[in-house]
Length: 341
Image (tube, rainbow, N blue to C red):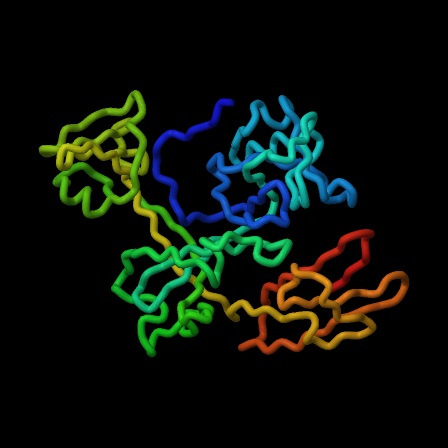
């Protein structure tokens, strides 16, 4: 078999507008975020408005994918599914046509939004956390999971300050969540900006100290400007902008650096995320069951069948009146049941 191999390049760990990807069975550990602009996953076509079809995402040879193992961007996957008469969705399992090989590997796109969060420890090191929707307990891989990730790395902080660096600048002061290990969990947003707008009086040291994003070999048609010893600029149309690439010769090695700066900014929540378990809420006409290992806390509330009405009521304290985001996690293993929030 042939395998798709991407061109060597830099893939940014922080990005906006992430989408969630799964493995073939959504009960497996593999719920992660992925950059929709990169070919990270495959398609998974189904229809959420049809009960029997939403559970099974389909892929069909020479129709939704052109060769085995084809990875594509989110946009391509969505278009392939639309042409197939369906769309991307949050599936339970993947069915391949005509050969439904259970050993097929790889990730598939879903239509769920996903976000990149970050943990910050007391020394200012950070670890990436993927805020993905889980279908079962422990679906998120540990290296990007909130409590378990230990992939700490160093970053450069503006003004040398960061959430949790002192008693006067705690996690709560930044509206971030305090985790069990004392680190701060914060949301991220990414902004990109052009660094150099002119080639006048730019040295190799300036470029190496301010540019950190790698680039591909400059495209054909670009204009080369020899600047100083070991430094050349590749521009398009004579403009010094985000398409400009600097070619640096340092210690016998050639590096290509993009004329862009990517800045990650941390944000918090009006109210740090909290989990409210159904079994400790006010319950009416329902049973608490522990017949599962997929529920957080090990228990869940089992709604009644038929015309009987079941409700669960939580009492929540908020810092101030306003709009807050609420997500509800539930399981339904058989027939549809009406649900109202």
